[in-house]
Length: 309
Length: 257
Image (cartoon, rainbow over the protein chains, first blue to last red):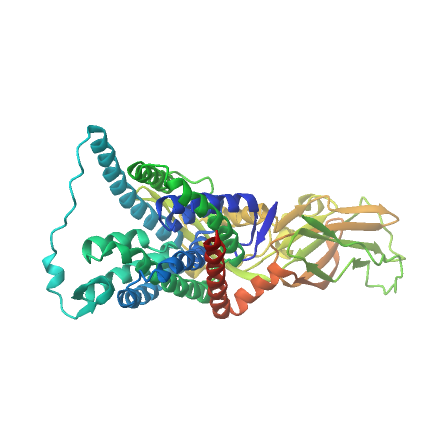
């Protein structure tokens, strides 16, 4: 059965899109990740124009991050003040990201920007995760205990000015690091159509030293607002948000996530991480391969001054 | 379920011939307004015509060409080149206005009907259609590449079924009565289209006639697309509100379990 995507201007098999939503939803339930960084490349592989894929993903993440965040809100596992500082950075970053996006669009290079951003980020994240999880598996085989990670205090962060107290996180630190982290996430959201949790969560734990119980809730809090802003900016300036596509993906994703959460309790965590890392690397390699391989079609015809698809 | 909207002839113009000496052809369409539904895969339009009463029709001498042109759009065609190991959009040619849709139907192949200079002068057929390149904004690999870019633009349009060549698209059904079936794919632009009929006699164009048709879209998908393009900021805000509702709903449904 086919559905017509009014913004992507193409007919797609609804089962394929639902299946992708279920698959990535399953993975996000399994690994506790947002999944935007897998879903956007998959949409691009299906032939959805990259500009539509990222704007639509941002729209879908608004929904998935809210449904995830509600549970954390109920448990009050959110540092609202930290979330707001991250959000201010995120808003600045989103505007910067969309400006960069539109500039490269006018040069006809926005697809290249999206692909290269993905190759870089998937390569770095996937590579680091792969190394870390293979080491963990190795240690488990040898039966040695994992070295307890006690990161040393980052003195330079404590020397920065504009200190604020974040009660929920029991922190008294400068507002500059969270602002910059939030900004980076805003840029990534607007050019990659991702929530950016995969950058923000490690940064909050290892750089800001936030207690892990508030990290996920706080990052989801920021992601809701940043992806909402990115959705509005892309819709307003580029008209690339396809609500039909977003809703279909979301529907599949919600179902998939339920299975993922249940399944995750049956697998060893380091094995899970190795699997996810392998998958991330595969997507990264496919994108990189498409960049260096001579394309079948060298020409592309597009309306002047419009969305570029 | 895909539906093909076939619009059939409502009016067949038999020689009602007001027989002014000038008009050699009389044509009419099954519809002057085409309405496209969201779920459609395409529409087709039937054109019927005949020669006027006193016209001495000879199939060996006469040929008919029908063209349908969609609204003009400025377009850019880009060609990828390998720069530092990766394939990026590099060369480009801009066209100030090319028809978003162009269908040409004829009783024989255009090159058999008349000469290339005449086709070129009329801008008739996908090979001769006026493209108006903006030479101040082009970046081409060499001075003759414009032909390659133009051919690629036509080929890409043909792959989308937005440009159609039908060398046998005009069929004579006897007594000088002819018909042509014009196909429109799902992704046509809305707006005013121009239908043109040309009569050739011995390779000379002896009569032409132009008339407009209107392309409209309706249905949920088209309304959504219209809203997204005309009220893009409101569309973005509503998309966010809808997503928030969906997210809340998903959380509420699965909390109960």
